[in-house]
Length: 305
Image (cartoon, rainbow, N blue to C red; front, side, top):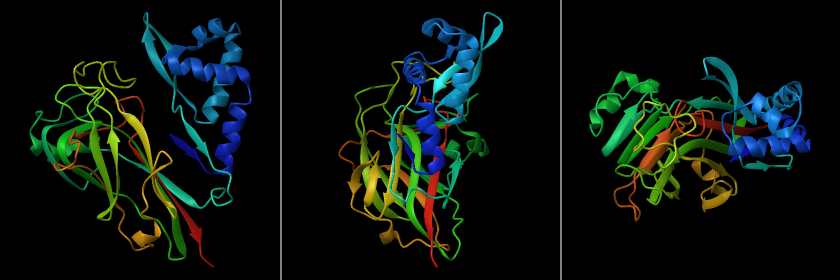
């Protein structure tokens, strides 16, 4: 789920979906990922130029992604939607330019513990051997696009760009994640916990380890009986509590973390051995899964006078 909290994002979103044709195009692309411009023109009985113009508007709103696909020895433009669920905030609190954002590669962790089944890979190759946690220390990990473990955690250090007169009012982190089963299992629940600076934020239960269909971005060399894609989740922490996709997972508030411009920002994702549903975790980065992203974050703040 993607949250829209700036005026610019909301206006672009509203403009993009103000056309019935573009709404139908979004729905069709969601079902037929990778469809080309010519096919869209045929489906909707409009010109290729009309499709190009409408795709441009969807691109400006960051609703679709275009990639070049080779087909019949010719390159064609393939369309994919970037997100299928949205939340729009209309309170003045979110209508602000006071935020910074970034993206942390999933291999740029600062600390980890991994128990088999486990492994790590780039978009082109496995890093070392599967089920050998030592390869989580390999320098190639900085290029990792997928990692998985049955028990343990991955911890990341986020940049803190706050100034001494700025107070954070919401943290948002989005990532593609699933359980980790031996092989694949759509029904493989896993209780995955989240921590910030060592404080437990809450947990979310992943329903499974998905692999019946290939991930949209998962490379073709990847084995079909291995993790293919996850679910895109949005973790938010604000003055009301901690939320996953808008649903509260704990009453812990951002104020209780006592963050300021000197604080560390350390984010941990854990599949604990003692969890009721001990089903591991898999993280997907750029080049794997259904969402072409690593761990994205937004830090929204107020300026104190």
